Amino acid sequence: MADPTTPFDLVILGAGSGGYACALRARQLGLTVALVEEAEVGGTCLHRGCIPTKAMLHAAEVAEASRHGAGMGLRTSFEGVDVPALHAYKDKVVGQLHKGLVGLVTQSGTEVVPGRGRLVDATTVEVEGRRVTGRTVVLATGSQARTLPGVELGPRVMTSDGVLRIEEIPERVAVLGGGVIGSELASVFAGLGSRVTIVEALDRLVAGEEPAISKVLERSFKKRGITTRTGARVASVEAGADTVVVRLEEGDPLEVQLVVVAVGRGARTQDLGLEEVGVRTERGFVPTDERLRTDVDGVRAVGDLVPGLQLAHRGFAHGIFVAEDVAGLEPAPVVDVQIPRVTYCDPEIASVGLTSAQAQAAGHEVASSTYPLGGNGRSIIRGTSGSITVVREVDGPVLGVHMIGAGVSELVGEAQLMVGWEAHPEEVASLVHAHPTQGEALGEAAMLAAGRPLHAHA
Ligand code: NAD
Image 1 (cartoon, helix red, strand yellow):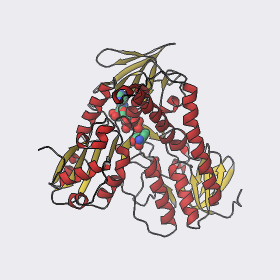
Image 2 (cartoon, helix red, strand yellow; image 1 turned 90 degrees about the vertical axis):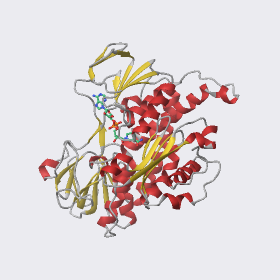
Image 3 (cartoon, helix red, strand yellow; image 1 turned 30 degrees about the vertical axis):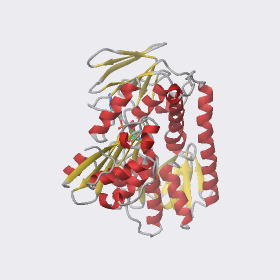
Image 4 (cartoon, protein in one colour; image 1 turned 135 degrees about the horizontal axis):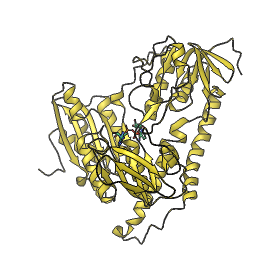
């Protein structure tokens, strides 16, 4: 333990994506760092979020593919799930990444302080009776799954955290909330053989995306046997020994073996001493300026507890930004609209920048065009439909790219460059895209937006 009279340059509270990225970058820049963590380095993303859920999604995709081998002349079938082996696969992926990360953090010379930290004043964090001081304190405690009032969690009613430890694949599942997590977990369970119903209060799934994307998703889910009940409000959830009854304000109740609650994530800012020190919160979140400074001098915040997108890669970017800012590099602030968003359900959704409606509301003169993946060889080979929509300023740059279809998550990097570098569709259209790739469809979408489509029916 460091001498408490010598302050660290940074004391970081929370070793998730935002916190550990901040620590690693700060060490590269020669700053001294204490990283306080009550559980494991890696946080939600590595242990309860992105990584384990994507491992389960991959297993579900393989299961789905095994059902459809006959369409390619393959004698495959889906025989069921060995649940402990599924968890072993997922845990192995997490374990490998965790080991690598612990090595990185150790090598970096970051001082990891195990235990639960609490702010005592603007420069001091108390960790289980010990005081760690820093010239800058970085709040990086992340988020946690919310539940609904009156809905008690238990063995048959769980958030995404519980899903990672399920003991059997339920016959019927109700997913409450059709946002990002709801759509991903509906995909997991449908792939693994459950009959899934999504209950969404709004009038469409993934309501943050372009409306056309929600339509394609709902249609694709229907084909996969996933039922969507939109505009549906939950009245009660009653868990029995073998089943759970979900009553909606209108329509038939659902009787299922498992209820997954996916109605958003709240900030983990309770009992951190924020109020006492004067760090303002709004509904639990910590508002900051664009340089991620809170209302208290010397206290910054990064990641999910800062209002805005709750994404691991935003946390990384915030953490790097704060390290560089504290080191005096004057980095450019992280802008939410330039951050790519991916929902890893089947079909995948990937988008970056403004939707048409957002662009119009921001005063742009907007032109929007949609290229169907049905015109893309590689997409047909892998049996996916879907589309790429390019939203542009008339005679101006690309403002947003919105994609749906199997495999589109891997296209979002190029889409992000278009938006981030304010490329005009004409510039992207003149770049030669590899054939046959799905990326080619992005080139075609740019050609279409530039008014010179090649493989597009009139
Ligand atoms: P979300 O905000 O994406 O979706 C929650 C959904 O629940 C909304 O559509 C909302 O209308 C609905 N809802 C709320 N109350 C309801 C009720 N009583 N009955 C029915 N529906 C109700 O939140 P999420 O899916 O829980 O995800 C939380 C956060 O984590 C999001 O910010 C998400 O972006 C992030 N996340 C991202 C990824 C990824 O990048 N792939 C994966 C997981 C989570």
